[in-house]
Amino acid sequence: MTTMSLPLRRLLDALPAGRQGDARRRAARHEAVLADRLHRLYGHLPGHAAWLESLMTDVGRLMAARPAALQAVDAAREDDPAWFCAPTMLGYSAYVDRFGGNLRGVKARIPHLRDLGVTYLHLLPFLRPRAGENDGGFAVASFDDVDPRLGTVADLEDLTASLREAGISLCSDLILNHVADDHPWAQGAAAGNTHLRGFFHVLDREEADAYEATLGQVFPQAAPGNFTHVDAMGGWVWTTFYPFQWDLNYANPAVFAAVAAALLRLANRGIDVFRLDSTAFLWKRLGTDCMNQPEAHWLLQALRAIVDIAAPGVLLKAEAIVPTRELPAYVGGADAPECHLAYHSTLMTAGWAALAEEDASLVRAVAAATPALPAGASWLTYVRCHDDIGWKHLLAEAGAIERLAAVAHFYNDGASYAAGTGFQGGLATNGTAAALCGYAADASDAALRRLLLVHGLALCFGGLPVLYMGDELAMANDDSYRNDPARAHDSRWIQRAPFDIVRYAERTDPTTPAGRAYAALRRLICLRRELPELAAGVACTMLPSDDPALLVLARGDGFRALLNFSGRPLALDLGAYGGTGTLALAPWDQVWLHRG
Ligand code: OTU
Image 1 (cartoon, helix red, strand yellow):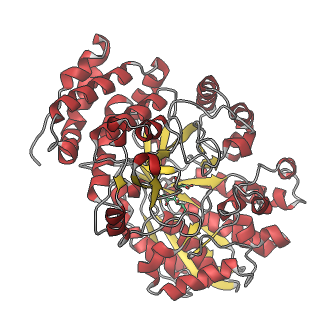
Image 2: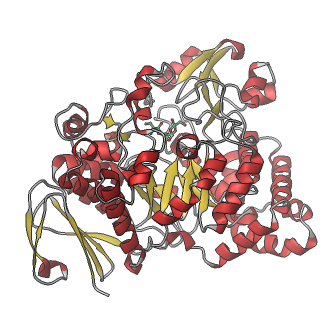
Image 3: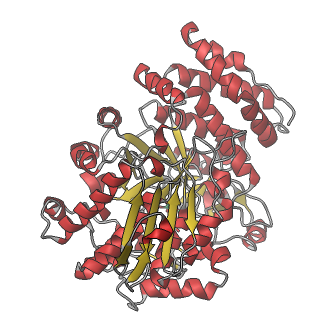
């Protein structure tokens, strides 16, 4: 790598004298990667030097505008860069409207989050979305306005401050792969603004077909194909997701600069973590599936360097739903860090597969293919989220597609205790955790053990575990989407019910299904908090076991979790796992062993 340099003078000039020292120190650490990645991406374009100058000016101005309280957060986190790797960290993910009605209502739920031990709250998209259908807010019409139905920018700033006081970091989506078709960039492009037209990919049909030959499809039934003909654009606009979500063209440096600035403006409102949506899709290359391209990683590394300079307390989280071998690149290496956090999506899908197969071998295979991460980076582990559970990315571990089809069949077709529903004809399911475990149907002890088992894996594996709203109360599926024409085509809505206030009231009553689930899950969370081996940085190893259904998970020398993925009781000799005596492990039960 030849050493490039940046016009740092522009950045420094935008800052008051008292803050230039910090800027110089941080720039000295991150300049080489930033300059190099921007050069690789855009160095060949005319006007690159002038573009760099304006980018540095923008970054400097946004750094200058960073409120003092957030500068203090930056300083504290620079001193403790692994702050989010502690076993005391626990995440929670929710839609604003379904969890609290609006942003003020979310604030009113802080006591619930604290009681659960939550230190990190991911609120699904709350920026002003497209009018009409908007993919649950994932079609963003403005990066700077809050959805008026949810509140105001002042409410957002108030919420971030209240959360911070409660020891909870706020994570917001940054949907950087696409914008809504009514975002001013798209509208300007459609109205003939050539600068803004360059923000998008507009192709003729022949070009689109050439790409289609090797592209996959995310919503093959609800939104077939990857291109949408837009008359006003005189061609086919790249739309990987819904037709109203226009992919941004990151080969255009103006797009990168605009998105980086949008990120820093939101960071200055107090957002701690950005969930970078659909990161795998950012760069297009003919003849490929246009996922996981090297340039997508350079873009993320450049964004990371900018954050590290201007707002180093902020974390980036990659949402890349891709095969296991592609995942580690999203956190990058010590030489060029990328995101601080990445969803471990194949660990999640393998956990559900293990439950269906009554065999933990896919979890073992995923773990074996998962390298240890560099210091200051962590997996995000989870059981459910607002999206589907899709098994296709487990093909490398599973060997045969039929095996994954059998797993999908188990969840979707009434073939088992699971009440899942299919998604877009793929190897996927939708449903809440309690529905998929059968607990929503019979609230049996066995079903509760299944619910705890999948959560146990997420809590023990090593990473930041994130609960999905309602799973702590074992909320059931919500079928009402089927009668709503705006949602009926997308079965992910089955797991997006409003927070159930009746179950919430029952959480302290051990005679209710909600109360039993809440107490049991909370107990695991409390145990985890006390175990230093469960910090994200401690290596996770799967030890051999005599029974294929038994997963033996080791963290450091002192911690073992034995998880029974079968409906059979297992007789265990604990001596083999560093414990003493024998133990009868009930169907789907787990035991955590700790040597202090
Ligand atoms: C992400 O999803 C979001 O989580 C979805 O809610 C959005 O619909 C989508 O982006 C578009 O913004 O593959 O890596 O399979 O798992 O669309 C991006 C369905 C994604 C989702 C998939 C996903």
